[in-house]
Image (cartoon, rainbow over all chains, first blue to last red; front, side, top):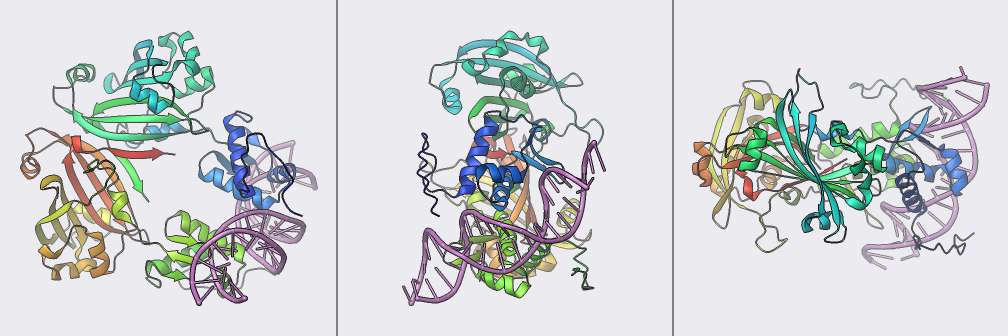
Length: 250
Length: 250
DNA sequence: GAGTGGTCTAGACCACGGT
DNA sequence: CCGTGGTCTAGACCACTCA
């Protein structure tokens, strides 16, 4: 009756953890590894229960947690699906550019520079890669109706995003995360942002067409994959009077 | 066998909602009403199950949700307790003033003004009270080591915070939320914040001892009670170079 | 109607905190 | 030791979707 089936897994993940925990890690790993693509349905709960040798209740507890984390999505009568992070909407929830009231739009993107260079040490550290390793650096400007709204500098590790170099920058499109997914198989699932503000520097004043000293919001974002490993670091600046950043606490 | 026991409750809360939902609302209401104070234990799960006529599993599902929402706290072997929102730490997570690295401190508070006046219409609307009703308005300055770090204007509805007028402003202390709780029985449990930035106006430049035009972060906060009803609205301004606001997305 | 998730039950056993 | 929450089960029945 004891659970001790002497199952010595080589990566020793279970040290008498509750089963729903192990299931959680297991499913997370499989999703991160791409066993099911975003939009795919995972097996029905009954099947998962059978294949994992646990009861449906335990499966439900695990899936509940993954749904809460935003990894999965449930639809009664249809199934449980890997969530495609509709990141683009949540990312821009803090802008207040609506053409018509309430309407969202994706700003146009113009790549200003793409280069391969050693990652700045702070960035390498944030991305959790060896100091001094190569990265791809992009500078881009984002505009709405031709008005610059955001100047961005971002880095990704070269090793994992090599294929980004195959695409002409004119063909990058307005959003990068779909490109990461299509070209490099990297799905951005979550992020951490740090906000501050400063008086605009000469460089960015020119880019954003602002008077010297105008306040700009500075947003640093570290984006993570399904497995919570960091993928991309970026710093964005935009005119403060265009920004409202909304947060719920607790 | 049907559940339709023709129970016409006068406030018609249940329109065939799942029981864990009704329990959830029920417990939330009782906590908000102060049946148990922060720090108190609620009855054990078995007892709740018995008194509510549901199984323990259903109680657990409900309590799980309340724990996730931060209303309750569980301790194995001890019980389930109403959480005292240790708001003071989470509220200040965005400052980067540490005297020593990593160390937090509560800024000193100096009340500059207290007055009774009709709530500005935008504030009345945010607080969900009749336009034109009386509010209490406080202006205060918050300092660290004597350096002004934050200038705040805040409003609460007079009706519910009348007793705030009994206390000399010199005795307000450095934190308001504990005062709200002690004097008015109002516990702040959550909040929404909106951030933006602007060039400092003459008034606030003087208060914060900044050069004219220095960028300041502007934080508007709407604070809620356990029952999610708005309690207080405030707007704070502080020098941008003192602020780092950290957020997790998704 | 077959298949899916959604709700709910009644009870077993475990782990922890106090006495 | 007892009372608490923590894990897990096996199965019932409901609600929804889709062919």
